[in-house]
Amino acid sequence: MNVDGQKYRTIWLAEDGWAVEIIDQTRFPHSFETTRLENLQDAAHAIRSMQVRGAPLIGATAAYGICLALRADASDVSLMEACSTLLETRPTAVNLRWALDLMRKALLPLHPEERAAAAYTLANQICDEDIATNMAIGLHGAEIIANIARTKKAGERVNILTHCNAGWLATVDMGTATAPIYMSHDGGVPLHVWVDETRPRNQGAFLTAWELGKHGVPHTVIVDNAGGHLMQQGEVDLVIVGTDRTTATGDVCNKIGTYLKALAAKDCGVPFYVALPSPTIDFTLSDGLQQIPIEERSGDEVRAMTGRTAAGSVETIEIVASGSDVANPAFDVTPARLITGLITERGVLEANGKAIATAFPDRISA
Ligand SMILES: CSC[C@H]1O[C@H](OP(=O)(O)O)[C@H](O)[C@@H]1O
Image 1: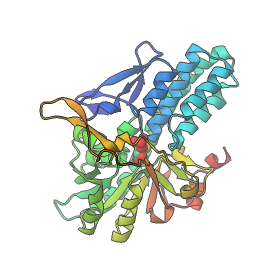
Image 2: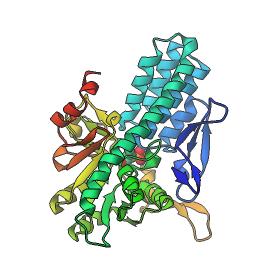
Image 3: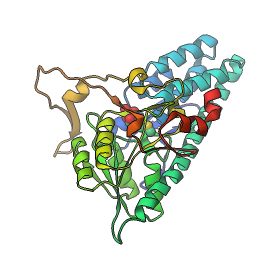
Image 4: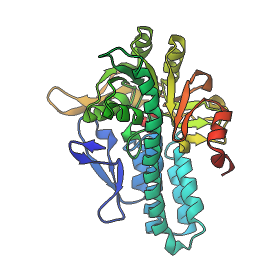
């Protein structure tokens, strides 16, 4: 994506051809900083600390983490230990397991001396395919936006609500939920995005608002609890969100608060779409509520907030009464019955097992 005239992916090979560089997303929105990953532990820390986050980007980072591990030690033990180290970093986004399974299945049969080079080729391929997938999602989603735009009066904009960040910062580039937005905006469709701030890590306020602003997409940051009211007032034409893990039957696990938006959308008759790259489908699951592991993150993320003071320094402050307990589930599950459609790289699907199986027969047999 273009950042002040310079093209960026969220993750790329350093000039030395072996280290990996990332945009450190914990520094947003007050500074844009990149950092260098040189070993397996650097990659695991980047995922665990959310320097990189978003299901597709977590998968891509894990793939490069395998490269860095094999560069140091290409033995079977090293490969297996690297996979388990990376798998333990975050439990919910299935792209992590998907990428590690893909790397392990491709690399274990090779002679150790061949593994590092093959790993880098595969990791680069995962990144390139992520972008191609997101472009396809963008095209299919842009048709939905165009159909709504045709119902608008002259001068009116299509109003889209999104939750968290399923933007280019959550992927290698383009984003999933944002791909239709960027393509429609670039194609001249008048649109505006309501950006849920997305407590407690504020991916909406810190990341989505930043990237939409850099691309010139009109947007308004709102508190998480405002979306239902805006839908009741007719201010939302559709909702597009991302996903971290979707079951074979169309149940969607996404950032905490997504389920509440889906309930409000259903009650208000607002179309609710999920941008779904196929590596995020977990074909082994049929019941999201019962089977998808929900990450419980540190309560410190709820207790404290980091921001920039009037003097310009970035500081962390306590915002919860001392002594109070806090809970911090990071995701929730939206049942398929609340979802209007799944925007995949192979088209827009109904949120059900038959539609998913018909669109991805090759993935089920894999
Ligand atoms: C395109 S996946 C984006 C997905 O990941 C986010 O979670 P996190 O920021 O904790 O990695 C959020 O659920 C987004 O919808």
